[in-house]
Length: 127
Ligand SMILES: [Zn+2]
Image 1: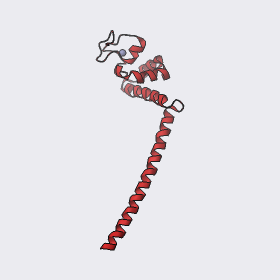
Image 2: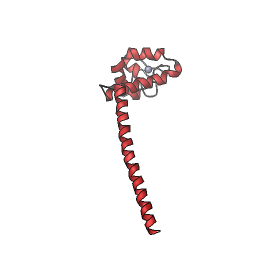
Image 3: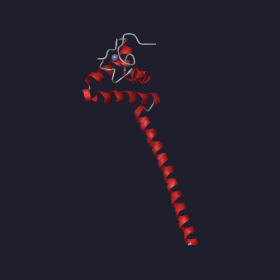
Image 4: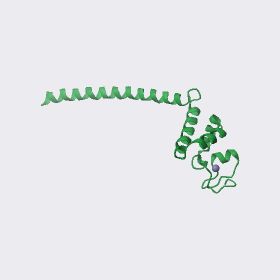
């Protein structure tokens, strides 16, 4: 189904959809919240509210709007994934996973080191 009142490539942007507005080629939000990001934008709307997202985007310098839009969407995704810790919780989880992988890697490195020592001992026996 094609969105009504649009001349953008993939339909109305997320902001125009929520505001029930026509999304034109000159829409200031289409580049940052395209139609394909509806699920992500819905989470952002729940966390920040569309009016606050619009306000933040209008206050940001042009060269920082992509970073801001990305931050809004990532922070919202973090709160969707971890509704207690949000972004901090996601970072803590990633740190824990890194520590776990580092411990596993350390064990593998020790095993490799032991195998190399055994190889040297065996090589010395047959040379
Ligand atoms: Zn739009």
